Image (tube, rainbow, N blue to C red; front, side, top):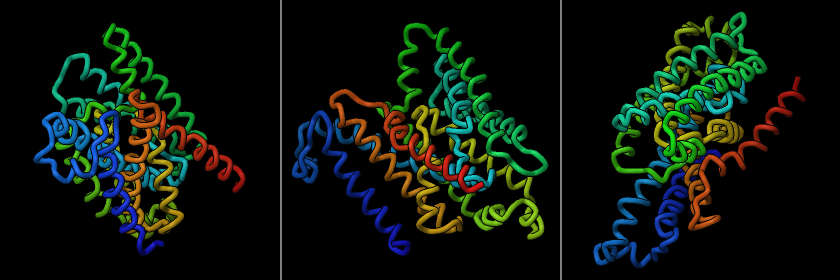
Length: 322
């Protein structure tokens, strides 16, 4: 299966992507899809302006969250490390909410989210780092504390927004309904940049898995590498949160699952995890759109449904291994 995993994932993405175009409150048949030039204008609007951007955004964000999960776990050397769980993602919401308050352009949602996310990332990293090692218990406690502190500012900002705060509440639960071609185009930039950067650093990230001392003996600038990787990871998480809200557990479930199949080497783990993350988020979004249709279940609720039990499994497994 390891050999054919990329092919299986790509075929799964293509199949579910085509299927998702036709599924929804307005069903679109395969015949209509194949003869789109002859379809009514409202069908073209649904396909080209609503469903296709949404599907592509789900794929892009799935790749971004899963790849960031891979590198964050390598930096913290623990499978429980995830941008959502340790509080990195929560901090990005503050910057995005500020951008919403001032009605800034879409690109600045990601920029302000990145600034907020970057600051909290290094606060969490510094406070949880003891003598060059990261204690997972301390990491989780610090992450929860930082999330709660920044969450207070986010809640206050929502209070100031007033009656329109319900839009932010829905967005905080994970929402892809606001997908547009412009947002898809913006997201491609941090995704491509981060994937190239992470892949270039793949051998050094592999060295981190043996511990900081071993990596240093192999000539790796451990602290410099961690700073650069966490910075790029914060960029990825920030733009994901800015455009889709809080979608948790993707960076936890996917890297760990794919690691069990292809092993810990980032040469295989990173690309396979990115593809698997894209497929997983598309599955979750499709479930969210259909399960109570025409009412939409926030995608963050669906991922939490899968992720929370998985997190408990990993936590107890880690505890039993000590």
